[in-house]
Length: 330
Image 1 (tube, helix red, strand yellow):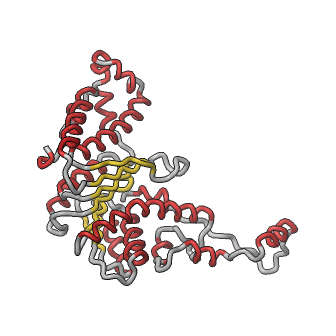
Image 2 (cartoon, helix red, strand yellow; image 1 turned 60 degrees about the vertical axis):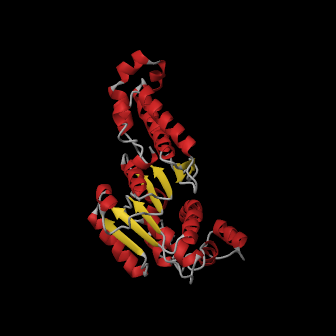
Image 3 (cartoon, rainbow, N blue to C red; image 1 turned 90 degrees about the vertical axis):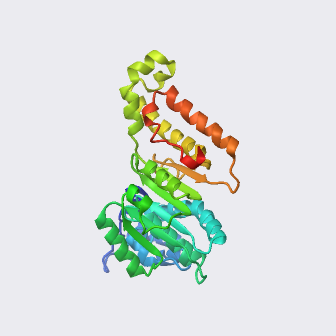
């Protein structure tokens, strides 16, 4: 995951200030203390809100816990978001774990691998602690320094079924360091065309599931802007992106629509939902794509036709290769 989850779990939390030992409490503080008497302490609250077996050291590294190992209002919100994200992915992990002796998850554009570490800890160390699970989590990232930091942290935490690979999407697709097929592909807040790279990787690796949270995207908006005059003469729909602000917003929206159509045109069933509340992040769209046990040829062909029609209607024909249909699905 690129720095996307940083917005949710990457900022250091403020630590509480310490009062001097000889400081006399004010009447307001005394009243507040009397109201909170008998309530759990911060340490007790941490124990209540964390799940048994969670790595305290990992949560500190992700700034979900403060350096003192405590939760405050901001970090409690971050922890809630982490659990919310995990609830979408855990059923997919359980499904592939039940179906295969060894399953694999690849986090594409992993960045600092926040997502991979969280999934590993909650699934292997919490949900299935002590069970003989044979899964493996791969973090794929182009920045060598981030890959090295993730390797160091995984070794320190004893997360032995994690690997971090310094590869581009093209290299990852053919690399011997990855298995020929991957069960789950994730990409959290992968910027611009990195989400498309993750989809291409998932298609090439015949992924059973893809979990995508797109970030900023500009490619489609650039093509719309370039062909604006011609489009206005061709169709009144071009009014949707005539103004520059609308071009950017519509370009972002239609990019994700095309991604969903591309996945459906390749035989996946797609669900689009919110990752977290809009008050936390505007980059909030979660795309869940799963390949059904039995191919649905009629739906796949219909999606392929709709994908071509949308590209043509919006004057986006030059992006046909970007939103391509995999040869096996055609």
